[in-house]
Amino acid sequence: MTRIRKAIFPVAGLGTRFLPATKAMPKEMLPVVDRPLIQHVVDEARQAGIEHFIFVTGRHKAVIEDHFDRQFELELTLVERGKKADLALLSQDLPEPGTFSFTRQQSPLGLGHAIWCARELVGNEPFALLLPDVLVQHPRGCLAQMIDAAKDLDDNANILAVEEVPADRIHMYGVVGVGAAKGKAFKITKMVEKPKAAEAPSNLSITGRYILQPQIFDLLEKQVAGTGGEIQLTDAMVALARTQPFYGLKFEGRSFDCGSKIGFLSANVAYALERPDIAPAFRSELRRLLGEK
Ligand code: G1P
Image (tube, rainbow, N blue to C red; front, top):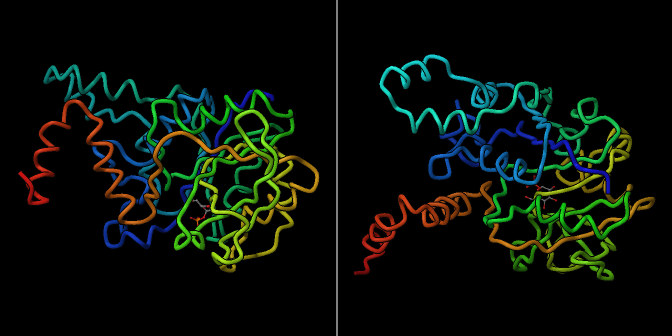
């Protein structure tokens, strides 16, 4: 498969599930330990070799753009105070100039529409799509695992990360039907957005990481509103699947749906427990809170 150089991050959502925290601050800036959600997802894309990071933002999201820029006054103060470790941390995360692009979704018409807003920035090449609500915790990030798996697949393959979900949560996700195995992946035979558990083709949900061919943009342009009155990416993928293969990859690692409060809180606990500088003290604090010794 052609090398995947570009990734889209749709960050235009209103974050109503986290009000009032997200009244004046984008939900993508909520911290998981000490890094914003969006930074974790950008880290995953960087590890997978992504070179151009495309953000589809909305009004009141300018702080995301600021986060990926220099903060001159802060840097100056850190220099003056000799805080070398903090300075190194900031410069390690700072993108190369020209590798981050921002465009706005002007109306909240759905995920499919948000992706379509990035068409001019992506151009005519396959690209990655990462939904920042989802974090996957694994030393080899989910997108890197997908790019590894793509080596065994056709050049025009579309690839979706999938995972098992319990029946009582299946109606919250896109769900795939399972066909023949190919390398580490399997052929997708069906895709349905937010089905009832009884009508779902399997218990495998689409987990917020995609590798898609650029032909999706023409289909998104024609796509009419689907589930929830929104232009759905899944509906356009169903149309694309008539002419191109779709594969699912059951990735390794633990996923967190940070669009939900429980998922977000669990991610904070899980990521803190992996941090050598915090884990020992945090573990005993957790035990204390849970009433154990
Ligand atoms: C979106 C997709 C859905 C996918 C989910 C993963 O839904 O439409 O197919 O399973 O992300 O988080 P949303 O969560 O935006 O409603």
